[in-house]
Length: 112
Image (cartoon, rainbow, N blue to C red):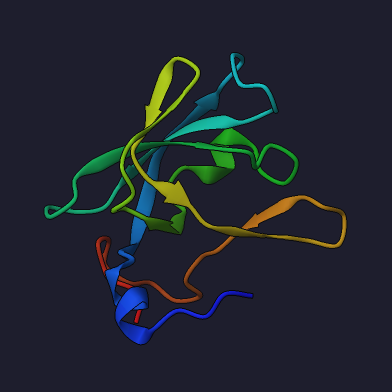
């Protein structure tokens, strides 16, 4: 594991956003959804591709708070440009479980 400094960590903008839309992404190589996530006034609405189809249905994602990196450069993923990286953890079955706050927080809030 490579060590980083605390200053390196502070450069990563991990912010809370609210999923406002989720739809299938049939062009993706692996099953995925295209998410629209609201990060509030400072960061706005960002698009992301997320390989979370094993544990989540699109309708269940609407309104969910998620933690995402918002300061990576946009990445072309097939026909879409991903503007943030939604975070999650692999569970024992190898499926991605989203990283979410366990209490309500304002969208755009930075992870400390």
